[in-house]
Length: 235
Ligand SMILES: [Zn+2]
Image (cartoon, rainbow, N blue to C red; front, side):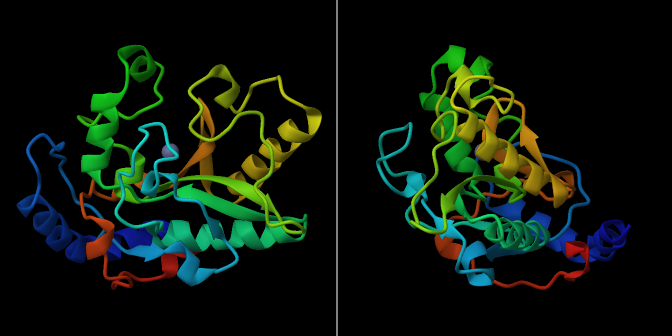
């Protein structure tokens, strides 16, 4: 309920944010009817520096083979970022920390992914259709895995990140027992805090209420940090 009240409170500010976003929209970006919450993108590691980053899209080590972000940073809408901090805290007791690959993603990057992805992979849902946008564009989806607290190294999962195969499914029955156990632990901890796993990608989670945020196309370099919406939706 608190999330709903907060959402209503944010409406006035939201309309301003949406108009501002539309003014700079590149052609083709989906036009949606609001009202939307104002964007309140926060940098995840500023809330909890023990959450590690491996922003592959800022390097050549991603499925496009080239950097598509100018900066290796990860942002989420504040309630989602707060929830992620709670997940990280809970995992710490079990010997793990969160390793974030991607959070908010500007819409123009989603468009690029679509353009360079083969049609059969598009059909399998590995990339979002830019005509609809991605929940990453709303700052309400995160791609992540875990690292081992004792070594600092990424743990093995049944597939690698952004592996466009059946092994990426959160229900894939192959791999080792340990790999599946870690994948399932990550999912359980995320679900406790309001995230839902993507049916085709164990690493991708959407945050509840994602539909209240607009599709954005703000580059990382222009995100100033903390904005003004109430923190109450982080309950
Ligand atoms: Zn994702």
